[in-house]
Length: 394
Image (cartoon, rainbow, N blue to C red; front, side):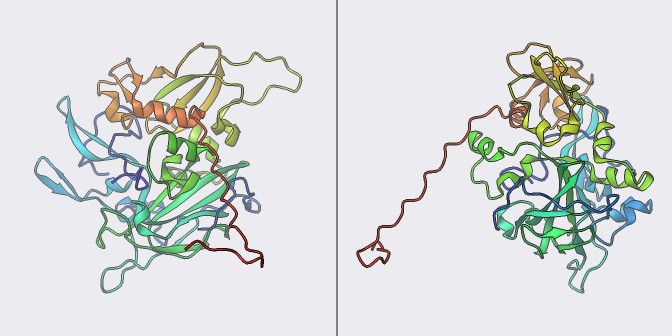
């Protein structure tokens, strides 16, 4: 399955959620929306809710929370619930004689609690926190996500996005303000590769990489984009379950703090431009605190971007390292080829690494290093006859 029709929910390249170590595969275990429009902020402390009645994530029963995947490995079939978690959790292969899971799952798959006699899920899907519906895709065939909804949350003066996929019905529209628990739709199994048996809610939580995404989409020849800047390829996912569990332990945990604690797998230095990367403008807390007013600062020669193994940027800082093109400045050493642990964003082994074509494209999206699409010509005004009525072509 690929992300967003053109891009995909399950990138069939590898993304490691955690350290570069082998993994045992059987271990237990639409109206246009202004992207700059204000998003309602919750009153007082942020309320965060799971999106369905399935709360087993918080009861210590993950096998009842996650929807399993069907797996066949070396002739053995199984239904591991771990396949519904975030990260590199699917498609085991042998690497250097050891099993490694190489297929990335960018969200979490939440199993239904209720079904009708035919087996269709009845669970309602609601917003995890206050925000605004910024995108809906009510046409199932336009995305491998099927019918889905995107909500923007105003957290720490920045927009963080939640995405709800594989819906049977969409009950909201772009521009709708929501609170934690507001109805968005009903669980289903729309999208490619799903069945009634494996019906679930696919939930993502992440950052928008660039508000100029549509230009990047055109520049990279991705084809038709039905989803504007809310295309899944433009929302870099974090582990939503980890954030829910972190907030259960510490209700004051900020999303920025959660991301900052995620291990860094590699760093990339990119040539500096006059303006900071769009991502840093959107999420100032990804960078260092600004210098005091009036302080003398040296313009950076480059920007150094820290990435998790899954390709999620977690920190951007100015650097005096001079580079003429994006270059990896740090990599977590691994005996397993890096391509299996970074969804093919990085190639090499051990302490040697370089960006792949996909890695270079991701960095270009973050930094805005791609051409601006030519402005579309304004539609010609229809000619009018002497009576002032519009003339129509035959």
